Length: 524
Image (cartoon, rainbow, N blue to C red; front, top):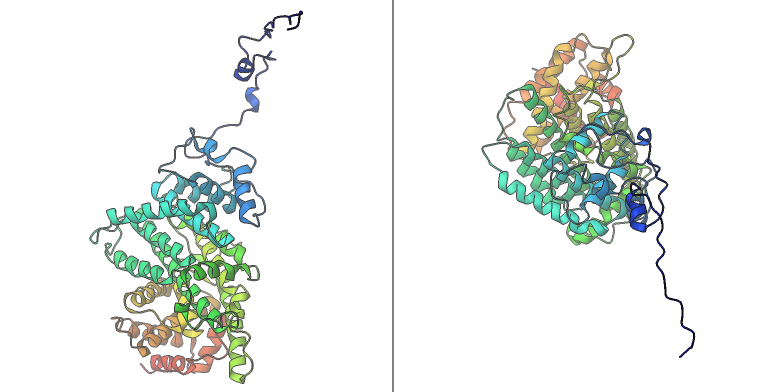
């Protein structure tokens, strides 16, 4: 043992301020006693105005790992800190729910709350509503799956909210009472099944939703209920068109060289379908990003009724331009088939991204209809102005019965056909009184919508449809006769030229049927 003993240890105390900050007191160090100036603190918004997350405008990540890193490491408050305790969410948020919500805010590219626009307002309103927030989480999940091919760490979170949604629908669903919350849930579930390739389940949701919509009263009680119903109908029509489009895309994929190893849809497993649907869009010419952006706007379909006093007509120019591009691709494919050459254009219609651009244009037109558009210097209206529902259902009928690229060219059956055709007829009747005072192009656009509806109904009759829509056909043919008298059009070739001023294929399978519909109307 050493003779010299080490000097005993002595505690050294650092002088510290009794009024210093908490961090300095815990670490027992001197505090400079400088406090943050009030002017440097961020101004807080009133309750309901402040968004619960920070959206940074940045390029979307290219892989799942970098995407999740962007969600967790984005400059600004982390999701949990941003949401609690200053912002109380209306539903339970277990597992990765907060990160999924934060991911959606990044992809949606929501601007700062001080910048007002229909998209930002609808997302903020949806987050304050239990139904809206759960719908957003489901949308965020299938959007993420489309982007990266699978749900990754959000798998259990998606299943939890999907189960809760189904449970809530089963608990609240009543055949005698229409509840908008249930309708929005059902349509969002339809979208989720469709994007994962479960087309049979998605169509079952559509049929069930249509039965449920028929339970509502024929006339709305007040303007607010009228807007709510309009939004519900829009959301349903958007889901219907997406299901029909993706089903047709699958059929064309199976007919192409890439899908030659499969004989039919039944040969594809659910895992293969779940992989193929997002993979298709990743190979498009700029179409994938448009679909992702459009999905970010879905909340405006179920949360805008409380934000707007009315919904406005839309300028269908961008929608018609997209359909015209699809028609050109159809003509190219038809030309190859008629000449008997090597058909390499079967799937090119999809690879060019036309349907995805159409989907984006339709969703953006809806968002634009939530606020009044800019006024023209001369006070006139766009030649292609129409209701959103009117143009959406007519485009679906055009792609089905004229081009045959929707739903394998087969018209809807039973109640769905009646719903689609009557929705178009209501739009035509509302705009008919203005037919004489509008421009020539506007009149041709009205005739195009009318004739597509009449041809679609005639096509359904040829397919043996048993839906009671016989009362609608004489109304449509009578309106065709009125338009023919107004424009002094008598020959089919002249009527076809006017249809081509909007959109019409050079040749198509049901050319004879179209001519017979025209001749029948003029013989009345």
